[in-house]
Image 1 (cartoon, rainbow, N blue to C red):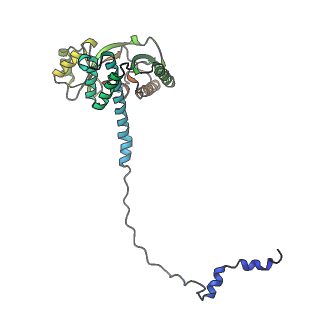
Image 2 (spheres, rainbow, N blue to C red):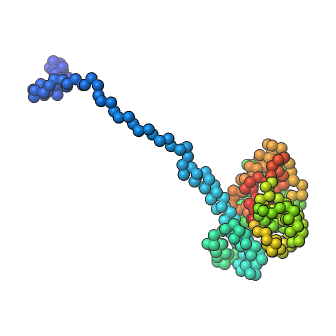
Image 3 (cartoon, helix red, strand yellow):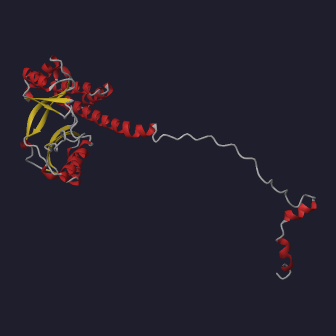
Length: 301
């Protein structure tokens, strides 16, 4: 180790320095020029817009397609239930004929309709139709029109959903609703006075505007006269959107702001379930508002 001591400084000398001097290369690079020529000015950059096509697809088209998908799935459930109860032939099954008319109104693809009817022909035992009673936040009352092939699982999942949103399955709710026939008609270009005259001629009991703009009118009638009222409304030049039995609350509820927010949250959660075909409730409109919250009871189902 002592013999290596004097050689340590030589090992630290850069090897390229010896080669540089031996080959006669300059010991240093020439000095850089005082100033380099100025670079050409860059072209102004175009400002990008604050949105793009993907954001529109994601925020607008995506939710809309999701709602249409849920609607098609529910219409397929209604087709299977009607076909299982009265047979897959629309000419011999009035309930199935009514559901097929609703499918045409909502532009349900032909392939979806045929697949639903084919499943009933291949497996006659269709799903089970239930009407469940429930209570929600703020004393709200709900009737759930459910179609499922597994009753126990469906009830357990709905019980969990209701419990998480301040509700529960209950009994004795049904007597707070009246069963009526409802024919929904496009209200564009139809005055309320004309609609009342047509309703009297068609055998309907009353006409109710679905919203403040009267874009959709509901003709109320006896459930047994549902088909005849629809045919007469069509003969009068109106365009029915759907015809079905519905449950109307006898006394609408006007909850406070906190209870209303909780009830609307529960209704939206129920609307997202594919096995809940329709949801009827007694949550009335707030002061200055229209009817029920959006996407809680899809029309025509």
